[in-house]
Amino acid sequence: MAEGIDPLVVERWSMERRVPEELRAMLVSEGYEEASIRMVLEAVGKAQRGRRQWKGFACAGGGAMLGFISCVLSLVNPVPDLYGLFLYGFTSVAMVLIVAGLYLVLE
Image (cartoon, rainbow, N blue to C red; front, top):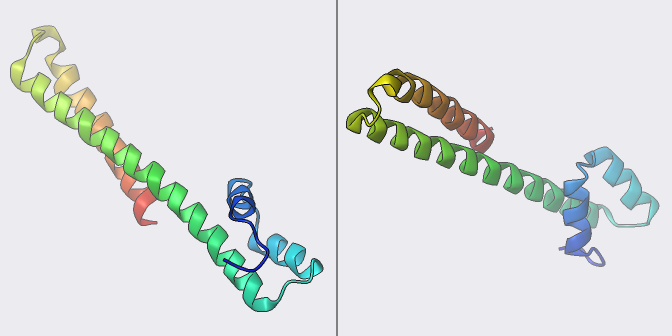
């Protein structure tokens, strides 16, 4: 980490979704070197990407779990009137969740 930059401050900046130009201008006005500024900007970007990937994995995992539950309920058929809901409804929602999660992870 850059000299004099607290990791908690970097995390706060990433949570506030600060623009790199704004951070650069703020750090230049405080008198940081170019190498330190570059390190801080990389750390903020890494924190933002990490949080986005975590959300993506959680979303894809939830979709996979819903898909598995849908598969089991379709095979067991505990309530015959809800067979279409289990087979088509839950599976469709699961696929949307998985694709959205993979989008967040891979973008």
